Image (tube, rainbow, N blue to C red):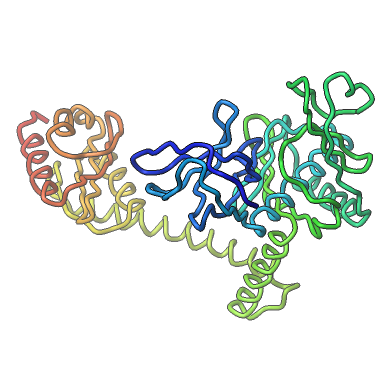
Length: 372
């Protein structure tokens, strides 16, 4: 579309431009802003401020007052957002009407769209919901957009009350859903093509449901198929046998983990037996889990252990001999040490490589000066 520049607000890092007429959708209602160009300059953001639609462009855009401009909205992005937003209306309607689960918020990103619900839901329920949404897509319900004022809303079964008095934009999907909404939508549910719930998690006493529709849903299935193919090839099993094979691998992993823990504990016991001193300060390159096991064995034998690695990780185990927290007091301020713990054990990270040896040296001096 074409328009003219109404105003230009120059900032250090951008130009904020208003137009006499704009078809760019500003971010709002859970939907991101349109993407595109104005006179070839990329539109970085679109937002509303005091009733005006501002288009954010990079600094020194070259646009001036009353200049005629050619504006291009990215059709693929607009279409994708329209598909996801319409799918949200259908998902919300099915959850509310058939399961008594209500949507409290909606957010759309470039990868996922989500709704938050007022009560928890399960994967089993959402599998049913997914099927019902796809059934509605096959029914090809029409999506209408029209305007009403507050006085002519009584005959409409709005899903949610509106907060404005006039120019109320209504989105109607067949007889399924009537909703006051300013977002972009498709013209018919057949345009959604496919709906897929991809994830659900507990969120603030309810659920956060991640979904994809249209091309996003098909891409998701393609990605899953590719992953399954790689797993089948790597594990040399059929698709039917894959779940059982993965379950067996998981069980074997748990057994290996238990065995490794036994050997780690035995190794730690032998190492502690080999320490002649009651206070041990030692560089070790083992993983965190083993160092914690070693520290626990040290404390069992009423010994103090300080173990540190070249990557800056440090573990201090004092047990009941002295307070690890007090031992490190003051050192956090003197050195760039990040960490925490309590009286028996502190773990952390010394950020600067040049401070690691001085930190350990000062800690060792403190241990030597203690009457243990």
